Image (cartoon, rainbow, N blue to C red; front, top):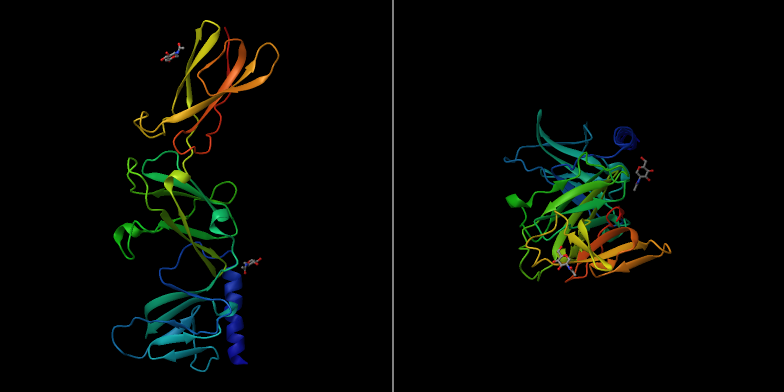
Amino acid sequence: METLSRWMFGFLLISLTGAHGLNNFPEKFVVAKRNVAKPVTLTCGAKSDETVTWKFNGEVIEESEDNVQKKGQNLIVSEVDTPMLGAYSCWRGGEMLSSTYLFLEDEEGDDLDTLLRCRAKSYDCSFSCVWTNSKYTAVRLRLGHECREDHESCNWISSNSKRDSNGGFQFEVSHSLSPYAEESTMLELHAQAIDNDSMLRRTKRFYLRDIVQPDSPQIVRCQEVEQDLNVTIDPPPSWSVPHSFFSLEHEIEYILKDDGRTERSSSALIPKRISKLRVRSRDSLVLSPWSQWTPWKNVTH
Ligand SMILES: *[C@@H]1O[C@H](CO)[C@@H](O)[C@H](O)[C@H]1NC(C)=O
Ligand SMILES: *[C@@H]1O[C@H](CO)[C@@H](O)[C@H](O)[C@H]1NC(C)=O
């Protein structure tokens, strides 16, 4: 009964203090699988073999508790369920030796493709991603194949305080692919997300060329050439150079003055008698998605 009430107290503590979930990733954590009877081992990491004590959410754990057992300096937690999730710490006297957060694996979450949208404005050294689901309180990403575990360049990119107006998280991910080389291996993007005391872990693999979508181009000028208008279009400033190598194709949409019809052209020469026009671009080699349209430009002459 006493055990139960302590767990209940711990649960209440989590419920009260953790109602909004963690906003940061604990340095050390263990993720227990759902509905798997296999116990989880939390390691203390003490250097000597002195006796240590374990605390859960600040409360000393007694030897007699049902689902936790001390084994040497380690703590074995079995039948992991909601009330047992949270911060475990290992102590020698008044000194905290380590702290481990116990999560439950979130297996029900959506596919990463629906949670995370990535887009590259060019073939240059970074791309951006948006984590769209706002129920997660912390999200982080890292590119897998660029780094080995515990390698310096292998830092996680954290979402801390970068929520957009829809509650999503924004990321800017750097990569070291050469823009000139044929891309032969897929990028491997790892994501971790915390929802209450559950952790979702997913990996997404894709080619950079598959997420390229240029910004809107620029309308430089319109020149009359006999019965036509010659529209000069420049790539967006964010696009990769040289433009002869990273070629874009453009599409012009225009409204005819005479009958108000809307037409499109992939040629730079369009009829002269139009009221306004706008343009968009895409990578002509990989046929990327089209950019956004430029704003309408009124044509007066
Ligand atoms: C997380 O907590 C909220 C309330 O704080 C609850 O509505 C939601 O169902 C919880 N999610 C999970 C996966 O337990
Ligand atoms: C249209 O303009 C571009 C430069 O802005 C020029 O190179 C091209 O020759 C022009 N086309 C015609 C048909 O005049």
